[in-house]
Image (cartoon, rainbow, N blue to C red; front, side, top):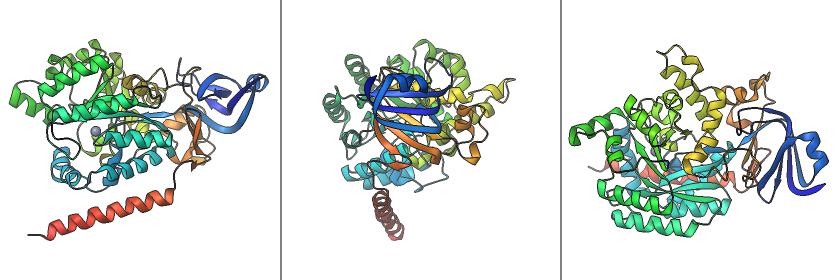
Length: 450
Ligand SMILES: [Zn+2]
């Protein structure tokens, strides 16, 4: 008998790697934060003596979900400006609100709210693109949640930095601080082709090559973005990024709702990644990403919620369902439409594909011996998920996020039988409501002033 820290017995385990098999009556053995084995429960009981033993008789274990694109602090703007198109939403509502409110304190409170919502719904790792990435990294570290923190870059001055050099300098300091951290990774996050000019983008490419860290950028979020670029420069944004040398296995293009066949080949040949945010794309009426065509071209497609101001939740189970359903609708002209993005593909997009895109697939993204124990348990013993022919199908097409019962990050419990280990929910709700009151009274004053 070997002594280990934690043994989780589950009715089903969907390890995602090496393939999409679902294992019956299996256990995950965890020691020092890492998965040491995934094996039949009977054998696990013969082999291991665990300090902590968790029995989950009606549950499916999956790798913790990876939310590959978002703006966590924007949770405090959830519901502030709904039902508007992207540029009206950004230029008339979000950017002015950010100019007024974003600060160290705002980001800390927003990120805590977002992390609690994400952990409660089975997400163990989130990617973030926002101001004060140092605060995002600090708060994630403090809680013990895995985070890929974007080093933001945008042409105009903000409360975070005055110019490109300052954005990059502050970003590099954060990268240096966390470079050996096992929970926090970093990537460059130039906001979008229409907000970052060529010179800083070239610098980002050089730095990303030197430091071996990824680049994530909103690209082709809408057809209007593509059209404006063509009118002003004669080039589609992706072509410009390719000429700047950005497309590579370290590049994540977020959204990609407007793509030609040639561009799909370009993404495939450069081994670039795509991060799909179906609900944000639907809500802002941005368009749809041709996910099945990307997958057919062997492009790695990850899944993100985007910020809670354009979704409006951070629910990766909901996002998997939206991705699966939208892919079938979007491919409605082809004969094979109903087979587009099946449930197992959706689960891979929400786990291992996100880890690959973020360059952290050695640590997380599947339930495999040697990886960190980032694990989500979903209780399928609910009316809405009966009967259970295929637990992954029930997860993607029928389960709600409230059925997530337990979550571990690096073997540490973050959610236990539905209770968050490190958050006071009442306090989070009060803090969010205080921000709502401040933001709303300011907006009202603003309207009354001539
Ligand atoms: Zn975004």
